[in-house]
Length: 630
Image (cartoon, rainbow, N blue to C red; front, side, top):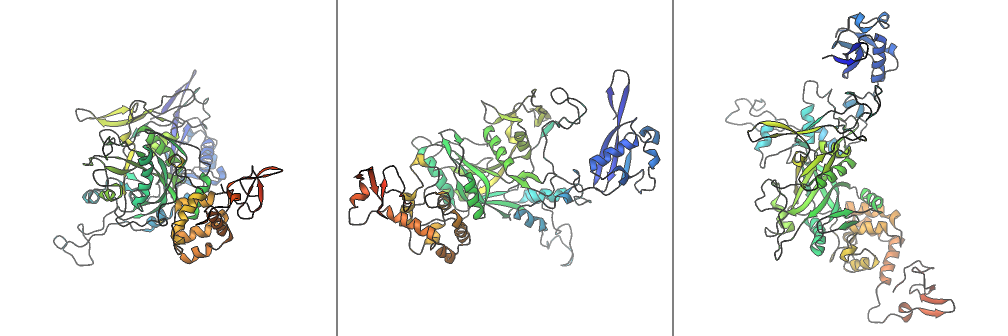
């Protein structure tokens, strides 16, 4: 169709001229009165070519009929170019062109698991069927030929059936055509008005079809970036839930682990959780509010030393039944799986942890960040994927506490990123698309649903059922635990930011923890995630510069390296400090250790290690820098 623009004195129309390059086809809007030189300038600007003299335009695909230089000053209508005509470009394109596919992003650093899966064949090989195959051992037929990883019949026949394709199966499906993905590229949804349009005043004074974002029709995402979440040990989750058992208040934590291949799904990815870090938070019975974490950078450095990544977040939604060991069943397909606030938070975190991808136009697409909910569920498990092995972790069927893994779709992440989606106040299962204002233009968002007569109808997403935006991820624990941080004997080292529960990380708790360990169990005692964070962040005896070798020993379970590290001066100072906090067995402490002494300068206290008399206001000895022993 030809687009008409109404003017006061005359009417002109804009035609579209297509230009084919070796990297694809681009469309250019020109007026019939524009010259070929103006079209050439648009082509040079869009494809980022050196100059207009470096291009050659041809009328035919064999590049025999070339537009001459004499035609440059002529109007397009005079050289027999019409709306929809195709021109063929012969030029060397710059590598920064926005429509060049995968080849321009070979420098993107992907995750190791993505690189390994890209190298795999991915096909599903089948054995020869004796009854149906009538060929030799070297032959193949339809009954034994390898299947593609996205084959729908194969996925439906699995037990249990696989609902979603893995992300790499989705990529193989996109690149399986004749062109082998030459023109395939992934691009996130854009819900913002383009600010580079020069044809009119900026929004809200003006808007046109070139800068206005397109309307969005929501659809269920057929693939997922992570296919399974596995906790290395059920004790990791049980220790996290212990905060709710003690206080009755909800809790949030971040999941740290790694991504590995998942063989139960073709070209699948599994997130293996090794530890849970609990940031500062204000907990209530029905809500949790995160606070500023001053140690976030330090925790990231420790995690990097351990070779781990932030793979997701976990939160509880538990309410105990009165006079019973059970919990209420709140979440199901009849109520909601994730509330609107939880979905928006999950989308916000996924946007912060984007997934590097070579096929994406900007180098990233989607996210591997997962959401795990600890909540009650009915024993029937209708509509909810769960693994019965979790019974051995969180209790038997009488407890009814399960783990549910989710991700939100890329459409949801884009809506949250551009501030288009907000929760409904009265209904947790519904979201709402903002209305356009003078400060922000919001595109129309639709979703399809079947009415009472079985017809598919399109509705405006005000409000929006969040089931269109949620992708389920199975969550399991291994039959045989294989923790990366098993910890030492006896009681575990206290978890950070649990002062409200009476769990405080200090040298007194470190002393109690080390007292329970054996002399030859140093490596096992140091294999505690929360202890390593405490050692890295403590300021009494700075040791962070020496912690890299200890983290490496813990990661590799190297007993010799751990013993060698235990002989460094910084650790000897910590051992001396822990021994100083213990009273001598069978004897009373010296009076100077318990009571201050009078002097001409006022009240003083005596250091039990170096016997220096310190001022009453000093909490650390001015000579040996050891803390004051009360």
